[in-house]
Length: 210
Image (cartoon, rainbow, N blue to C red; front, side, top):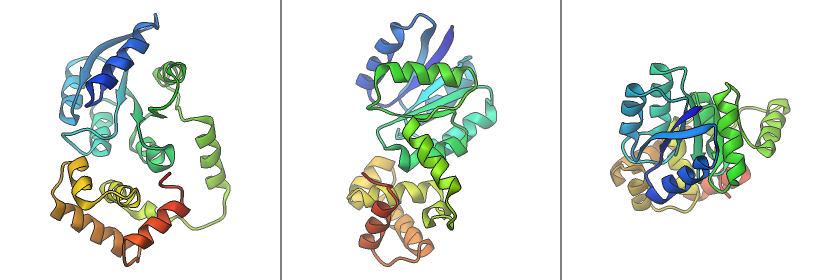
């Protein structure tokens, strides 16, 4: 039996995931969390095989939280389930220790397939993204500029490129507008760009936004 913790700040999403998993005889939802702080606390108290983790939750930087979770509990498999396209975050969460990345728009049977695969110790991404990763490894070019950004800087870049205002970005990341402004300045400096328009053009060119 695969013991699962679902971590998502939206109750309706958690209920939907529990419904899908309840119809699968070899899986059980043993606990759930609605914020980043509770994920590590509950994982340390209970033995889970797989944590299904949303990437944008209150309480912590989820990528940093993921690194801490894997450091403390290396045996736990983490499947990141996100509304963001794979091009935005899949590589970073896999690098941080996740075993898989799945978009929330995926079909229920793909979720079940992904949980089973990571529970067995495998890695899971969609076939289309796997092809893109392979192509990127084969390509003979310099590393893209966005790879030099920290995880938080990268989040801010993606949100700016998606048309989010500083206020909306601050609310989504549970930070102040002043802090978002600081991160934006760092992003512009590191990427040698002058304004949001240049960031948006770059993000579109590199498929960081839909």
